[in-house]
Amino acid sequence: MIIIIGLGNPGEKFKEARHNIGFMTVDFFAKKNSFPDFELSKKHDSLVSKSNKVLLANPQTFMNRSGIAVKKIITQNKKADLLVVHDDIDLPLGKFKIVKNRGSAGHKGVESIIKAVGNKNLIRFRVGIQQEKGKPKHPDKFVLQSFTGEEQKIVNKTIKKIAEALDYFIENGLERTMNEYNK
Image (cartoon, rainbow, N blue to C red; front, side, top):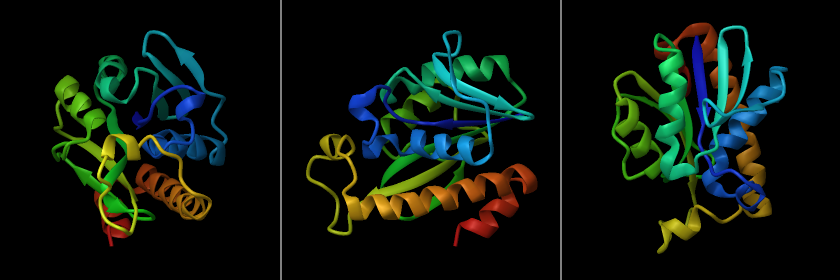
């Protein structure tokens, strides 16, 4: 089993926020690969969709409490590969990086997951949301802002590329995927 978790905040208010690029990516991947509609799983505190050997989940616990939902999902699927897709303010918009067994680098959602389940064998797709102008003065506010029209075009291309990388990962494993996409 492969579990792909998108990070974000639930609700219409946050739907287009930079922090929700994990949700956006998992939603696009599900649609692209004809997954069943997401359904709320109260036992997992997440919207979930499953097809064959892949479980997709968007936790509904809010970003800073993502570990609660992830722990519930992992408890039911102990031998699964866990992959988390999340925003990264340290990467430029349009870039993504695949990492394994790394610290949170200050990302509260990832920190919550590491506290709940550890980071051993934790695979992450870090998706850049940073503006070219340098780091924002108020990162907590910045991540809750929507992308501009021009930025959204870049985001859409990036999400498509990540969906391609996720398909590649499912077929070829982590090492080959990192070699192919971490360039």
